[in-house]
Amino acid sequence: MGNAAGVLLRQIKIFTTESTESTEEKGLFSLIAFFRNSVLSVCSVVNCFRIEVMDLVLDKFHEECGVFGIFGHPEASTITQLGLFALQHRGQEACGIVSSDGHDLHQFRSQGLVADVLSEDVLKKLTGSSAIGHTRYSTSGKNTIKEVQPFSVTCQHGDIAVCHNGNLPYAAEKRRELEQAGAIFSSTSDTETLLHGIARTPAKDIYEAMQKVLKDTEGAFSLLFLTPKSLVAVRDPRGFRPLVLGKLGGGWCIASETCAFDLIDAEYVREIEAGEMLIIDENGLHSSMPFIEKPVSVCTFEHVYFSRPDSTIFGRSVNESRHKMGKRLAIEQPCDADIVVPVPDSGVSAAIGYANQSGINYRQAIIRNHYVGRTFIEPSQSIRSFGVRLKLNPIKDLIRGRRVVLVDDSIVRGTTSKKIVQMVRDAGASEVHMRISCPPTTNPCYYGVDTPRKEDLIAARFSSPPFKGGVAAASADGVLGSVAAASSSGIVGSVVDVQAICSYIEADSLGYLSLEGMLEATGLDPATSCTACWSGRYPTLIANGHNLEIGS
Ligand code: SF4
Image 1 (tube, rainbow, N blue to C red):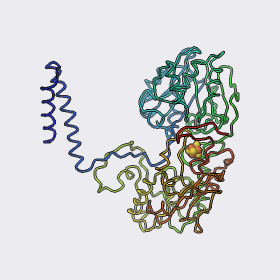
Image 2: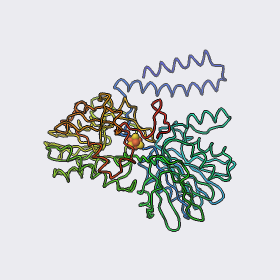
Image 3: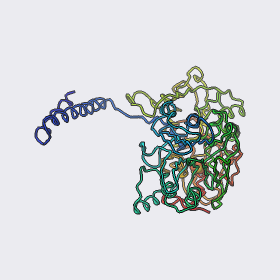
Image 4: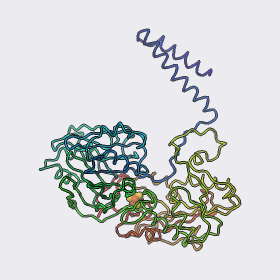
């Protein structure tokens, strides 16, 4: 603590020679400075043993948000809390609810998990029979309370609140224009620009104003608006992100995924169509398709990883898709092994499919801790795979001496996969073979998903551009060759060096599911599905690496 004493002495010297504050203020500042610098000094002592803050979010793409809304239910805010709880996997950083009592909107927003912050006391204040809610995983804009949705304003069209799942790539540009015209924003979120647009748009009513603004809005959006007397659901014309309609008693509910309906015992009715605007008020449902039609492009990754396996997305069971991906993976990328082990939780359905198809025994030999937070301090380098072992722990008795096929849904940077392979080896596996239930992830997403930059994606780093032609098959053994991550247009693409990735993660072999195999397993129509993060074929034009332009 000699360092701390030195710091204190220096601090005292600063205050006695430079400060012009009163004696009391000097004393207070000195005390504050002492505590602050003492903490810094302790940190610096610990640092001698290497202090490292671990980001324990596993190396995955992250869905940015989940939305839920209800109209015509006496316990609207409580039902919304439950709906958001079921959608917690789509965003864990913040959540909020806005309710309507038919006259006024009532809002609560907070950072934290649904179960922690949406308490009984909070819900009691969110009165009324309609509500919308949001769970957030921040990427667009900063991560402060100001960014937490739903946003609400009062404007010429009355009170309105909004929450959003997706990405509005032109929002920054629009925001600059509005700010130059004198608009004041309360957050850095792209979604707030929509409210400004609606507030400034002359129209006969709020719905016409919404239509006018959204007609000119490019991007991925599954939106819920709440007015004192209505709930409005809107899905962008390409339909990137899911949005489903359900019925609960005499009321209606809308959610990002059907798993929210199961919890509240609501009946699944249908998807909100791509390009649909659905107004729900006391007279029932009013559906329209007010936007310019565009080629539909639903996100295939929802079936691979984002959505819960107990959800039905884009008309198809997510669990069924993942199970079929696993079966197809076993056909395309067979392996001589003793046990099939999933990387929990998202690898489970595919691993069961792989085991069923291959006849190799399925074993849940890695256990996931669901209660771990985002950050921990790594005590020393001598503890191997510390970060990953906080989340995942192997059952040594099941693994020791066995040849293991590890099944995971994707490899993003490769860092976590490397640690998991090592962890399974340390548990005594004689061989570790990695199988991935989608193709190599070579491109970032611009449609409402948090992804690393292209240069950080391991499959992009181990690619050789440019590739011309369709999707190439893996090498003869189907495992260690090159896989083409080509656009289906055959214009842009690259050849992924799977062997190099295998060497990086230190597995005995590595095999990916093909693009065709994945699409076939999901049952999605390739013509209406986005596969850009694997194929490089973006359904819209991408400008400057981050902007989106209107595509064909
Ligand atoms: S690029 Fe397309 S398929 Fe990939 S995550 Fe984004 S929307 Fe989904």
